[in-house]
Structures are given as structure tokens and as C-alpha cells.
Image (tube, rainbow, N blue to C red; front, top):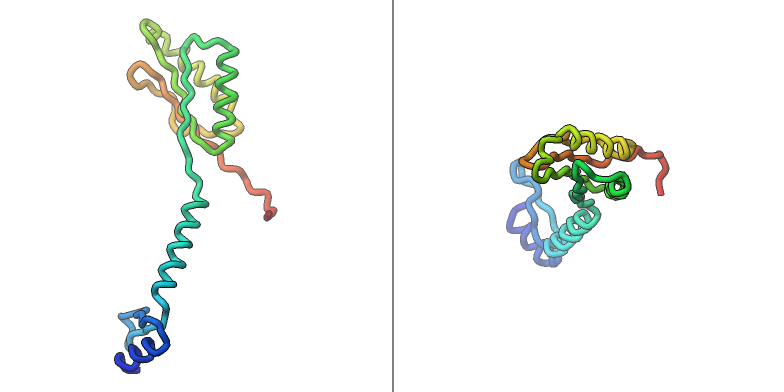
Length: 149
């Protein structure tokens, strides 16, 4: 069909003439309401963004001499954060002369990992950054049961 005929046909029907594949011989075109098409595309994109899960990084701050009860409390919070799908940044902060007890900081991070190891995987092993030792934990992907809701 000639281009002028196709344009006239589209205008008579109230549509736009959209070129689908310009490299084909002859070029392939389609009659389409372009405004409606763009609106539907924007709705689809908005819906995809809405269903996209945002992961946050939650921080748990500890000290080399953190007591058992405080440690248990923070470990429960870390577990809850991981179960919600957030990452956890476990930080042991050394104040003053505590910096000489790096092994205690590593021990605390190891204890934390043991408490939450069933729901997490280590993203970054413990390492020193200035006066703090940092370990990153990411939630472990849940295995599907095969059932659809």
C-alpha cells in the first residue's frame, strides 16, 4: 500500500500510522491509537515499579564488651530484619583503647552469624574500617514450595 493511502486510511479511522519495522522490504506499519498505547505502557511500568521490592540496609551496632542480654536483643532484631528481606550491616565499634581487642569484636560478629545463619548468607566477611569492624549479611532466598496462591 502506498504511504499516502495508509496515512489517509489511518486519519479516516481516527488512528495513527506507526512504523513497526522500518528495515523490512516493504516497511511494515500498523494502525494504532498512539496516545492510548503510551498510556497503557506507562500503567504497566508503574505497576512493575510498585511490585518491585526495595531492600534496605539496617545497621546493628555492637561493642566488644556488649553484654549477653543486649547481644540477644540485637540478634533478634537482626533476624527480624533479615526475615523481612532487608540486608543487615553488623558493626562493632571500638572506643578508646578497645581497639586492641579486635579478636573480641570478631568473636561477637561470629556469634551473631551463628544466631542468624539459618536465614542469612554472608555478603562481606568481617573487616576493619577505621575504628569499627563491619560485616554485611544478606537475606537468604526462600525456596519455593511449588504451590501457587
